[in-house]
Image (cartoon, rainbow, N blue to C red; front, top):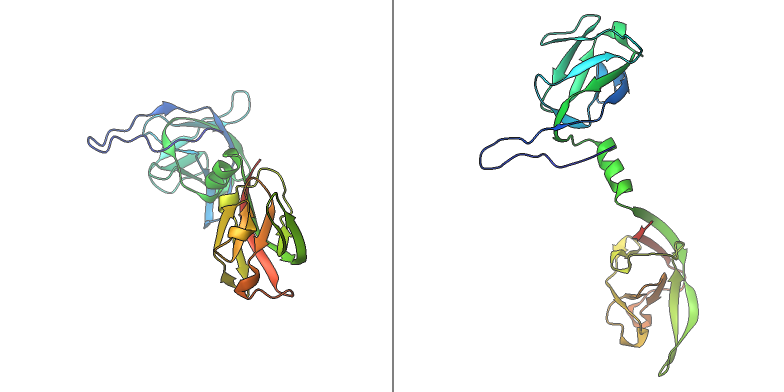
Length: 215
């Protein structure tokens, strides 16, 4: 599946169209348009470029109309890429050939873009505190409240958000909790989170964390 921005020149209004790979769809009731049957194309379709046929050898071609479609007909929304068919054609598998002018914005396409980006979203991860966890480096040995994120590899440390009792804490990325200024510190390139003992976080508080990691 290939995605792209709308390829529109903002000064002239001209759109740079591209030939899309054939799309195969099954005609079904549209979840966001109950009582209508069809699907949404990946890209904004160019008028007069669309052909739809039943996805079998020698399959019939659907006639494109601008009114409510009868059996064997299809109505096209050229702004958002919806193709609408008659109820009689429900469950038919069709193949669509067309030129596209940029990916349509919908939840499925946006979710696919997130997955394709190689990011994993971890939200609402709950932890109890590790109390008196010893931190040692060449200069300091200190006791700290800590948690360890469940995902320990490729965590984007700058993305870590921490909540206690529905309040978001202030944090920073670093390597030495002795220098901590905020409520917590995320160790650079690590899944360890230290908490500031002087900021009133109780040993029994539940910690809720949102973060991102590269997959």
